Each structure stands twice: as structure tokens, then as C-alpha cells.
Length: 244
Image (tube, rainbow, N blue to C red):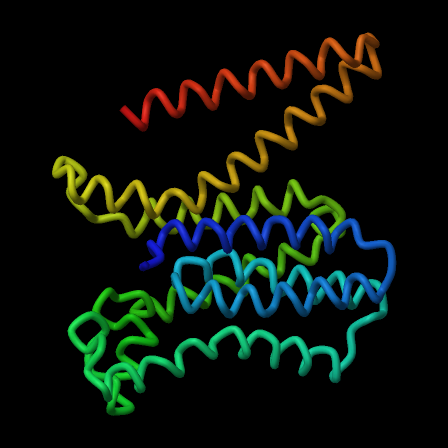
């Protein structure tokens, strides 16, 4: 049984969205600390599976640290603890040199019996994942904006920033010929990560619309039923379009 990379990445994206919302709604320091440490482990595990998750992780980390700092709950010991949890998520990589040594997956992942071979896979050098190190310096500019009190108070704005950064980055880097069905399928899989953010934002928008209509016009049950009908219709249309 083998886990499909992009499907597993969607699972980690969903977990990070859930943990982000839970962290935002946490009522005390104990809950925030527990969720932050669990999120750090999930970030590490997610990056083991798919490096594109880094575009979300690099947004979430400064946001979480700023939230902890604003609540006067950030300390050197806490940062070290979060860092250890983050690195713990990379423990599955220990299997790489072992599997390569016994020749189990050398043809899939390359030869990791040497340090250079291991680093080649860790950095995804064959795919050019980290060939744009200079471009990543732009994250400093984006992360400065994450200190805005408005963004720190609103999870929906945070998710919007994550979606915009991911979409702009891949619109810039996309260079596959989508006229070929195989390559089109590859491109579609990369966009699943941003589609997850779109779905979450759509749900938040629907919830805000329902609350606004109920507050202004009443008939809460009617608007709730309408929202469910629209949601199910959209899901049915999506299934019909993509799973023929």
C-alpha cells in the first residue's frame, strides 16, 4: 500500500487549517501551547511528504509566533520546544539511507548511502524545489505584513494571504505544457493545495452571509437550509465534472 503524494499533502493542508482555527479560538495559554506544538509536528511531517507545503508553513510560523508574543506567552524555551517538535516531524527521513543501503528504493529515491545523495533528495534538487533561494528572500516582505493586528485577529485574512502567495508563486513558476493530458494532470494536482484554501474561504463566506441575513431579516432556518442546498449542489456539480 502506497500513499499518493498529493492526496497525503491535502490531508496535511487540512490538518494545518484545522489546527490554525483551533489555535485562533483557543481560550487559554495551555491550549495554545498544545496546539502550537502539534502544529509544529504536522508541519515537519507535511514537508517530509511534499515541499510545496513550505509556502503555507512560512506564513503560519511567523503568525503563530506573533500571536504567542502578543499574548506574552513566547519564550526562548518555548521557541526551542517548538523547533524540536518541528524537527521531530522529519524523523521519517531516517528511513531513506536505510532503504537505500538495503537497495529497497534506490531506483525511486536515488542513492542515499552518501551524504550528497541524501541532500539531493532532501532538497529535491532534481526538481529544482530550492533552486530559487534568492526568491525566498521576498518572504521577509510578506512576513512583515503578517504582524498587522488585523491579520492576526482574522483567520480568514490569514488564509487569504496564504492563498494569494501560493497562487502567485505557482502562476509564476508553472512552465509545463498543459496541452498534454499527462502534464495537465500534474499541474492540476499542484493546484489542489490552493483549492483547499478556496474551499475553506468559501465556507467562511457562506457562514458570514448566513449570519448577516439572519441578523437583518430573521428566518435563520431558511438561510441555513439554503446554504446547505447550495453546498450540496456545488459538490454534486464538482463530482459530475471531474469524475466521469
